[in-house]
Image 1 (cartoon, rainbow, N blue to C red):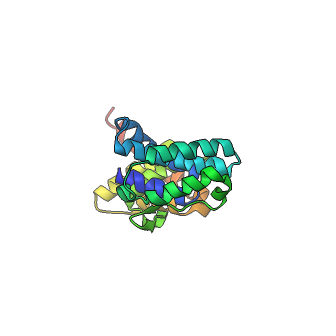
Image 2 (cartoon, one colour; image 1 turned 90 degrees about the vertical axis):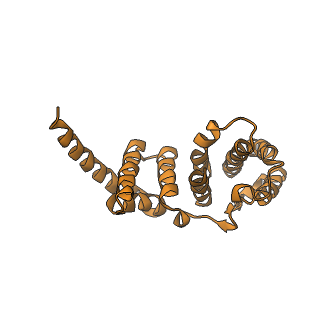
Image 3 (cartoon, one colour; image 1 turned 60 degrees about the vertical axis):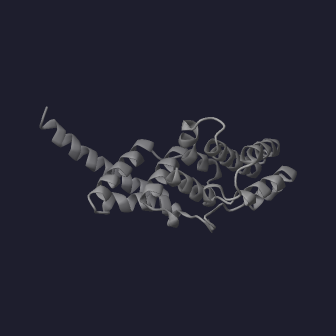
Length: 203
């Protein structure tokens, strides 16, 4: 769960409130209903949705989600899995009373730090890259998934080169993400063609 948790926290802290849930959803759905981890992720997902709706002007939706998120997070340790839940619960209570507080949303803290994309190692960046491709408009999920796969091969071989650097850049370089994706697409297409050429030799 650590890589998904860190990736989702970083995505949220980057202001992609709606997208953050994507890093947590698959883990959440795989957990037994009612367990602490399931309640924790369910609460975080609803927390990010509450912030998203409040900032989008859907006050009633935001208030309902904030209340539900607090119920899921109730009873969990204040620093559950390193996340400052005391701070999250306090913010949710303020949001319930006044959705306008979402204009200045809470930054999520993990192990006492506000986690950003720069704090993510390769495995968490891989989760973030695939999540961003799925949740944001304009990116092809299969291209990013292939790029992550090629980057994993590089890491396994002890070399962090072309694809590894581009996957990191896709996540971290928000201002140029579209341009990075275009370069990534070109490199993935060339790699796919090379693989197809080799596979054709043995058919």
